[in-house]
Amino acid sequence: MQLWTDEIEAMRPEARAVVDAGMALVAEAFASDGEPPKDLLGQVQQMRRTFERTFAPLPEAIVRDIAGVSCRTFLPDGPASSVYVHFHGGGMIIGAPEMGDSTNLDLCRRFGMAVVSVGYRKAPEHPFPAGPDDGIAVVKWVIENGISEYGSNRIIVGGESAGGYMAAAVALRMRDELNASDNLMGANLVFGVHDWGRSPSQRGLRVLDVPDLLSPEGMAMFGDCYLPDMTIEERRSPNVSPLFADLQNLCPAFMSVGTADHLLDDTLMLAPRWAAAGNEVELFVAPEMPHGFQAFPCGITSAWAAALFDWFARLLANQ
Image (cartoon, rainbow, N blue to C red; front, side, top):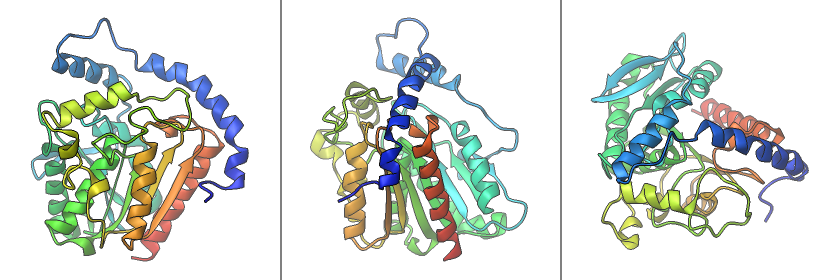
């Protein structure tokens, strides 16, 4: 099995150097102010304030409530080719749709898609299933109103990290609750959390012992906030962890992850299960790259972006 091409293999030294140089800048950007509070909610609120400093919201975004959920939308000049329903990352406790403004505007302009980035509720104030409930409510609204609002109710779901989890969870609920598989064109799952029972890499059993934006302690905290009082077995219930769900009759998926990511195993386990269930899967494994690898521009991330754009183009051409 070859997880990446010889061309990508040749890019590893450059990627390693870029990540090594960039990690210090990332750590500085996300450095918290002062000692963390003792209580869990206080720690989360401090993390949110720190994270918000990194946002770069764009004026092109249109903020509106959809199904009672605040969303940031980007609209093409004419009828949309599809509707990209995007979910931001942040461990289900931090983050906001503004994080994806630049990428979402580019996707809107590049492919003529309407983009709806969902401001779902977050833990610990709103634990499971609040976030996925908001996601499926927005998708249901798009199915019912997308043609009149955007010119299409054909949906591609996608997101990064916790957003990748949200996209997978919403795709499953579209099939099971809305009977809307025909509306679901594809799923862009970028280093998602697919095993809330904590896969080996989440627990620190990684193939590369190099710096990452995530840690086993951080993953444990995210789980305790999002799934309080649940045992490991309960966190692996199919309605909680997509890795353990029935994956039949789902859409084509583009899955991507770096080998230095604490979520590596989540994608490496989900992709073959998705394919074995009879669905199309394209897997991009980025050697040397950590969680959030798109923040480290190099040859590998350029190759990833080219592969992702090609996947979107083929998906839309086949609609």
